[in-house]
Structure formats: structure tokens, C-alpha cells
Length: 474
Image (cartoon, rainbow, N blue to C red; front, side):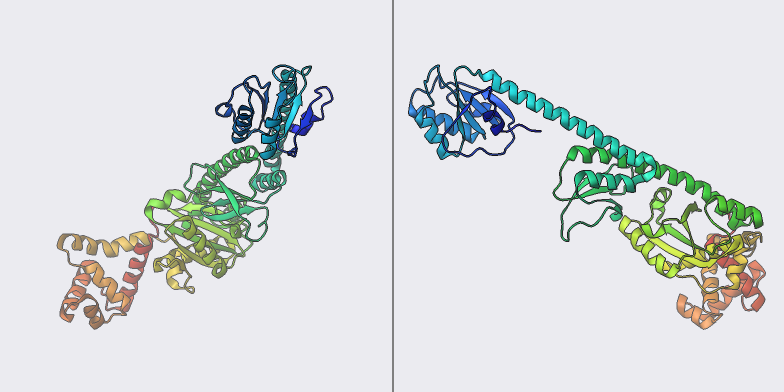
């Protein structure tokens, strides 16, 4: 407990005698300063009891000046020692102290100044020890909450209890954990959390902000836990990513796939919905450690082919995709979100994955899957040599374009995309129709497939689609 002026005045052994009319405040004492200087102001820090015998205060003017100096320095009271240079406390000093509402008390000759100093020092020392014990107990309770299985949520609850305020944790500008919202319009004091990531992580405490020593320790615990979570997340996403790669590629199927997926937290018996997140090339390194919003608690995540895959059991893609997209925008990532349908069994997961991957080609922030198509079916069967098919059909065109800048690939894409209309292709590319026909003849000659023939057109369409999505490549 802190010590107050009233504690000194009430101590029987000190025999202190209050003078004047100034009230005794409940401001804790910081120290006892003994001085015989005429102007003690430069040597005071505020919050002291100033003791003097008035050795240099022979006149009323000097006495008033001494009180003015002590008051300007923030002293809490003046103790005047009698029986040496003065038989009693000078009236001018009491009058000046009353004017400043500064308490004055007499220290009798038999009471040494050191007795007051010792009482204050002992009280401050005991108070400091008490604070250290309380701080140690708080540290132990915070660490116990985190390490005892309650995690970050339990840590924040314990911190809120110690502070008597609501607390919240923010990452990437979004609130990820909170103990409550606090009073409406309540201000928050935010302190940064260092995680080694560019996640703008902060711990927010509802005002009034108190006990910064406890908050500082909580900062360090949260920092360590978030860093550990990020490392675990990166490790798990790498392992699960390899598993999903094998399932999607068809190297792992049937009961073996179901068992392996089960160990990763994915039940093949439930309908699983796959989200794919694609970010700008310079931001891919953020995906292994990126936390997800609370709506995706329980989801299984992985990094596959430079994209973040999120597998949600019995999820609603139309409802969750905008939530994920908004969160990603808030993190500062330039991201596209695609999702597939919700299916059971490993084969269904492959289907959902390719639907999500195909939807990303639209390039929107949120990309809904197409209805089931033959193209998706063929691409989900990655045991078929699709990459070889695409290479056999299209490599002659890309090689010719590189040598002659002939734009045959562009012409083929436009022709297939515009339903085989030579006139529409000519308008789209700004060419004469005969030029388009000449290029189509070159395509037929180089590839052996005639875009005007239905079977050949389907073959070229699939080859273009496979190459665009990168299916079947290592």
C-alpha cells in the first residue's frame, strides 16, 4: 500500500503537529526531502514532503518565497522543524502555505527528520515488494492460462480479469479474438505485438489503460504464441499440401486416400467444400502462415501449387467466399477466391478442387464455380496425360509464333471463344477475313487438327483449357 501524508501525521511516535488550514490530500508520498536552501525548486521532483528548520528563512519574505518555491515544484506538504532557528512555525510561512492550499506541520525538536524519511522509505519499499509479488502472481496466472490448454483465448480472458477491462487481439486489421466489446463508444488503447510477420498485430485494451507492466508481459506471451502458431501453420500446410496434391493428381485414391485425409482432419464421409486463394506473385510467401477469420475455424488448410487451399466440411460457398475475400482485402493481399461444389469422398474432393481452380480464371475477387461440365470431369481425371495432349496439339503453334510473330495461338483462342465465326474473329483482331482463314489453315497444317471440324475443335479446346489451368504439370 502507498503511504500518505495522513499516515505521517497520525503516527504517534513522530508527534507531528498540523498547522494552517490546508486540507490533507490522499495523494501518495514519493519521498522526503530535507533542505535549507532558500529556493529548493531545482532540486525537487514533485510529490515530496519538504522538511526544513528555516535556517535561512529569517524574514517573512524569505519564508513566503520558500513556500512558493516548494509549491511550484509540486511538493505535497512542508514540515518545519522547531527548536533550532525558530521556536515555532513562522506565521508568514503558514499564511503563504494556506494561500497555496499546501499543508504545513510542525516537527518538534525531539523528532529527527530521519525518522520521517525512514517511515516513508520503509513504506515505499514494502509497497514495491507488494507490487512485485502481485506482478509475479499476474505473470504466473497469464502464463498458466496460455500453457494450461486455454490458449490465446484463455490468456486474453485472464488479462481482462486482471485489468478489469475488455481486451481484443487484431491481426491484419481484423479482430481475431476478444473478451467483449466494452461500453458503446469506449476508446481503446492499442499496443503492438511483434510476430515477425507483416500482420499489423495489436493488442487493444479498453480505456482507462492501467497496469502497463502486466500488459507488457501479456504482449510478450501473445507474441511468442502467435509466432509458434505461424510456424505450426506453415508446417501443417506444407504436409497437407502434399497430401492434397497426391489426391488431386490421382496418385492417392480409394480407402487409402480416405484414411490419409482423415488423419489430416478431413472426413471423406462428409461433404467437403474447397476454396482456393490466389494472390499476386510477390505475396505468395504470406500464404503458409496467414491466419484465417473466425468463420473458418475448424477448416483444414494447405498450400498447393502456390495457392492456399481451404477445405470446409458442409460449408456454404456462396456465404463464406465473400467473408474470405473481404478478410484478404483487409490484410492487404491482392487476392482472388474461387470455390467448388460440396462433395463427399476423395473423388468428390478432386472435383471440388478443379471446379475452384477453373473458377479462378474469371479473375474476380470472388469466383463462383460453373455447373458440372465435361471439361471439369476430364481435368479431374489427372491420370489422363492431359499435359501431353496439350503439348502435342499446341507446341507447334507456340513455336511458330515465337519464330514468326504470327499470332496463331491468339487467333485459335478467339476462334474457339467466338464459336467458330470467322467474321467475329476478324472484327475482334482487326484483320481481314481472308487473313483469319489463312491463319486457320496454318493451324491445321501445323497441328494436324482442323478447327472447323467438330472433333478437332473439341480437342483443341480441351488442350487450350488444360494449358491455361496448368493441369497435369509437375
